[in-house]
Length: 460
View 1 (cartoon, rainbow, N blue to C red):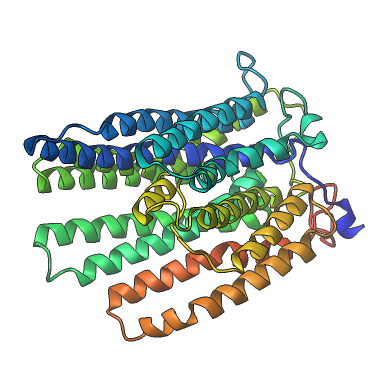
View 2 (tube, rainbow, N blue to C red):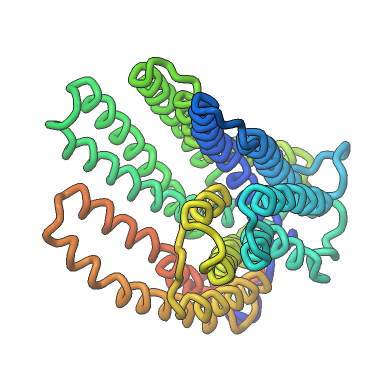
């Protein structure tokens, strides 16, 4: 019986995709908005300085304002498209219609960026194509995959998965919690190492914020790790507890940091907008978790059958994350190649930051084959195919080896660096490796039988 009994959940993993899209849209809307506000301020100050010397406004502030609006709208449509995949409301259009709206919003946003680069930067065709590839990779990837026959077969209202989508949530909780734990540790180390360079009040504030976020991350990881071992279907109360704790800590830390930034900048509204954006981003995931679990519990009131383990053990959630990673890797590689010599590095960096991508002006050659294999692994995981373990493990092992070899010289240099540089460097290395390491662990877990129990586990 074994692995052959494993299959996608009843909703084909759409609830996990919905959680990923809801989180991304909820975080990107405030952070991209704050980043663009800073760009608008810089542009406005430059225009004012030019006017003092007889120059005129070059119109860049107007363009960036339009892009700001389009970026926030795109992120909000992204968020709503994700929520529609797991929130079954009779008054709303079909679930997959939200993805159509998101693709349209992304296309409009991308067209505005391309127009800006053409009109204000006189960018060549290669640069425009690279920008289009970068900004449209994820929307088109989601659109293409969800138009496969098995996704269209779920109908306008995807059924609730066998476990309510809690195993996919547990997978996401564990991965996001691990990344948050590393980031919180770095913040604590940075605050401690800066004790002599900043005021006592600032030191206490940064240290307390880092410690609070560290506690939240520990709760985050522990809840996800317990649920991922097979108890996710009965972990609703643990998820809700994390949601309450996460919202409270995130809100307090965000508000304190916003006030601190405001005092430090004489309450500059542009600077405080960054604090507000960080606050919203900090509370986004725990708020999504609480809302998701609450919604599922309400839906269970009318359910006629008890919930049980998902037949995919939550592996499709990992598939969606790998699809996002592959889209980011491949689009960044193509965009950087097309941009080479076409756009100024500053402009390239700004476009990629506002798209949520790390800037790499000239990626290594091995990025392309690893990205293609990651895409293959993502599709195998989403289909819960018999090849998924082999393909995903091969990608994860190759990524781990290549990343370790490529970063080994930098890691050796960090041995003699200050403690804050070591903490940041090693944390970044572990975060870069986390998708591959998590993939190796999850895809080689014990298979799940049709009744939701691990294969070989005795029935009582």
